[in-house]
Amino acid sequence: MYNSSRADSYRNVNTASCREMQPHIFAVAARVHYRLIQDLGKPTQVIILNGETGTGKTFSAWKALEFLVATAIGNTSTDIQEVDTSYDIVRKVKDACRLISAFTTAPTEKNEVSSRHVQVVWLEYKKNNICGAKIASYLLERNRVTKGCCTYQIFNQVMTALADIEFADTGLSKEKQYFIVSDLNPLKEQQFREEFRDTLRAMDMLDFTINQKKNIFQVLSLIIHMGNIQFIQEDDCCRIDTDSEQSREAFENTCRLACLRREDLAELLTSTLISPQNVRRRHSMCRRNLSTKDACYHRLHSIIRHLYDLLFRWLIKSVNEILSTDLCQCNRLGILDIFGFECFDTNGVEQICVNYVNEKLQQYFIEKYVTSCQKDLQEEDLIEKEKSLNCSNILQLYEDRLNTVRKTLFAALNDTCLSTVPSDTGTLMRHVNATLSSNHSRRRFLKVKNENFVIRHYAGSVEYSCDDLFSKNTDKVPDELTITFSTSKNKFLHFLMIESDAYGKSSVKKRTMLSKLCYNVDWLIQELNECDAHYVRCVKLRRKRNTNWDRKGLYKQLANTGILHALPLAKCEYPVYFRYEDFCKRYYRHSGNSGNYGKFMSKKFEFFKAFRARNARLYY
Image (cartoon, rainbow, N blue to C red):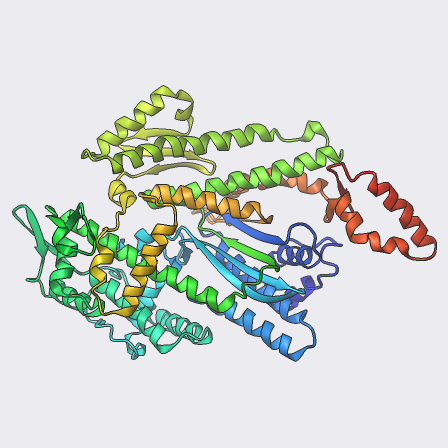
């Protein structure tokens, strides 16, 4: 289904938009590529993949990327140097995606290999050839690092291939247990070792130096060791448990890899900084001991998540420096891959974030594709008004649902987390119920049930647990983290902290995870508004327990992804369309040709010029 012969049948870009093609991810990629190189529409095109978790979005995105890079190589000119340059870029793009995948994929209840971030792979085109690339990442699920199970694949790869990391002193041992990778499956060790070799091979192909690889794996090892640090409560303060051999070794290895003094690290993990007057003068600082073990663990896990986020951000930046050409004038073709809608037996704040993003992108699809297409078809009298959808009501439903989640649940949770008054789940419930009581229309989408929240999403109702809701949403990184690591002799960690400090000062500061989520989603939507979007809706036909196909489940997926709304419009559309003015600009040069054809076209273009003021399109 995805072999080279099937790809070849879609690869002729000269006819890709002039004939009907069988539905396939290659067909979508071929149409987008054709529109880009023919300057049809905006200079930036993007393919958006969406659907429930486990429906093959990442796989389809990878196949679309393979098709596009193969097409680019096949269409490259006969210039040997140009062929080599294009081939080198597309090879590095594939290696970069493979490398980033190790840091962003993890197993879930319904998907063994689930992408846990939003990724856009941008291919940069100049003169119809790929001249560079860029990878943008949004909304990495940081909480998964300290979940204790179902962690990112890179950690499993490291633990199963310690013998292959001879260039870095990790201090790890396969005979010992580690919290970060506590659910490592021995039956998959061979698979993880092979994947680790692929990860190393990708680093080599991207020209990562030995020192860079050493830095990456030392930070990963540091994170694994930090996960094993334990605490003991003594009266009204806590200390690091050095009586336990496991905790003591983890603490010593953390100090060694981070190049920090023991007293500095212990102070960072068991106390908090109060009102620093001058960050350069230590004697002006006041510290308060953390009184509970839970407070120490929350602080430790926050630092671990922050370190992983810094490493991943550096990795993305390094990869883009290798791939991108930084050309101001070049067309771009993007592939957007996003985590799918999730509903598990137990759902937490991670699922709230995932499903909110999916809800927002589904609203974008209805607004930009369904509503826009129907409006254009109505203006051109290509669809009967009696058969038209009531798009305004559908859009209003999405808007009301998103506003309910954002202004009722998110706002209440953020206010409770940032309040100086100690709060608990009961306080949050009362706050939400008070807001719902003042606006009964919001009860359609949000309600409180058994001290949990139930949100009625576009794809169905999901019940969310309140366990760890406050700690995960606050996710406060200690303000003195940069101060502590400023004394570190580990140059790479020191560099990451400086970069983090500069990034925090230059960006809008968001103090909770949900506020960061909303900010990043809005930023992503703004990016998509600058593009011509093309959609791939992924569904998966499943079997029931009696081995019969679940037809109702399939119909539900088709309805939830908007396919049933889009199909009637697709029947009325033509494969190529653009405005009269753009048509004149593109083909006006032919009007000077001699012969009857030239005279005929001259008259036609005089007719087209009369429609320049009209906001109409030409279909054929």
